[in-house]
Length: 294
Image 1: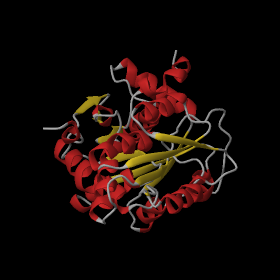
Image 2 (image 1 turned 90 degrees about the horizontal axis):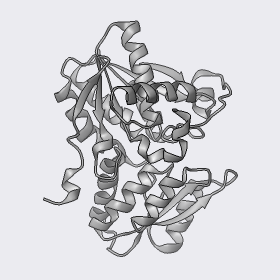
Image 3 (image 1 turned 120 degrees about the vertical axis):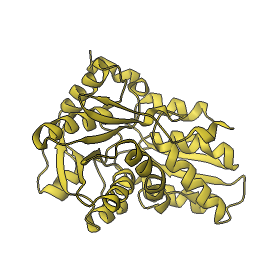
Image 4 (image 1 turned 60 degrees about the horizontal axis):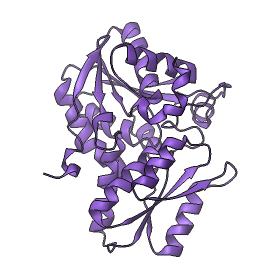
């Protein structure tokens, strides 16, 4: 067995009657290990020779996972990150051997990544559109979750690329069309404005794993396929409250996990149903922001 074989099959625990799939127990500490393997396997099968570059624009976790997994496929990772990303993610990518380029707020990271891939003869993975992102969760995370919580009635999840909620949601709906899929969007985001017709201010923007500025193709597909039943807005303060609650129960989830947990509890109370969500990464990844939880 190799370390890459430990991706997936993560455990599930209950806290406040919420089923929590502990994705931070993947090798690099997030659920993005799953999609990194799927995306890199896909480019390998499509004929990208070893030694070439794989490029990704990401809020961090996917960049970490791609950099780590690239070693097993023989590729060179080049990761583009927003300049305001937490430094821990930048440093993690670098120590794993990845090249990092920071993108300013007035630049389009996706366009830059595509241009670099063309110039270097590599491939831009483009997780926002990549079908392998969706398939990773449809073929692995969804079946695992369903086998662990067979009486599941609702799945709550915030969307970044949309791949997780689309993949898990589609699998669950195929098993039982009555299972409700609840999408969380961050307060003050483009998604809030686009999907709900309003854009409220949020004093913090902690939810790096959720999408603030884009509406991904995978999320659009999830909506078009009627996978999403309800949409809720979550604030950074609510995410902090949820992260505190997780920590009080011994689970060191990050801020997106806190947001998921906050609304999972709220939904379970409102609907009196069995709710599941995922703990995507750990608060350890955000040590420079831990003071917000004290």
